[in-house]
Length: 346
View 1 (spheres, rainbow, N blue to C red):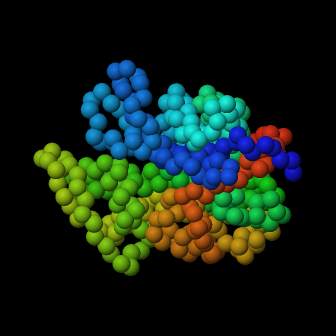
View 2: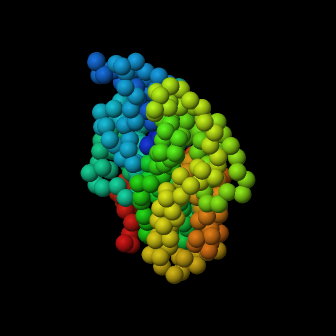
View 3: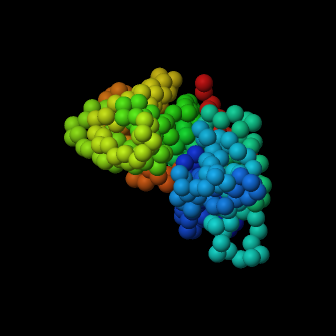
């Protein structure tokens, strides 16, 4: 397969929750929250990435902290372009002042529309890319997980990100069948927030909800019930308040979200050709993305599908790593546009 010069190329995982940038020879050099702080009065950008995320819930009235991506697609085009320019510039900060604009391989959800995909590519070019090439998020995740995506054998990847869960069966360098649902890590955080508001009349922020998910979150039945103290604002008195929640309660709050993810996996398996299904039974289903770190979710999916399930070694960076490795085949994507961002079998 033809190769292309790698000297100026970047791989970008533009996620709803986090953005990662891969540079050939260096690996992932940028890991930042997909968050921007804007000045409402002037329209100027006050902070990007981690600096902006640190402002959540702590800003004065004239500063708004926004997440320009929603459900895996662009919700605020101009802000996304500015944010991406910052990340690309940061990734290339040590390069020559005379360096050419980079070609950028950027992942997109497999269920994205052509209009949504075009917005991502245009924003990438506006951010400073010479050219931009889309690659399906589950395809990138599979490459990053080390699956044999170019071989005539079936591989199944389930990437549970912040905005979407991407399920795909891959063979011979293409997506055979896939399912993209806008139910993922953000929905888990929202479910926890809603549960605590409903049962304790307590308002908590998104950072608190994420901490709860990471520290005591669990899918399915709880064998070891763990407690955690959390702080928030009492909805009745308006004053700060501390409560104690258990992992069993959090499991209850996450039940519906987990069921939606499991259903997407089962639905994809039902559409998989028998020969490829047999390959997946031998190799197992591979999980990636931050949501795959939810305790016991691998066992839940295994129980429901009757197949072995494994979490990839580096679930948080697998998409970025796969996108970066795909740069080796950039000529292939140039010759076969959208080859990996559209399922070949409905």
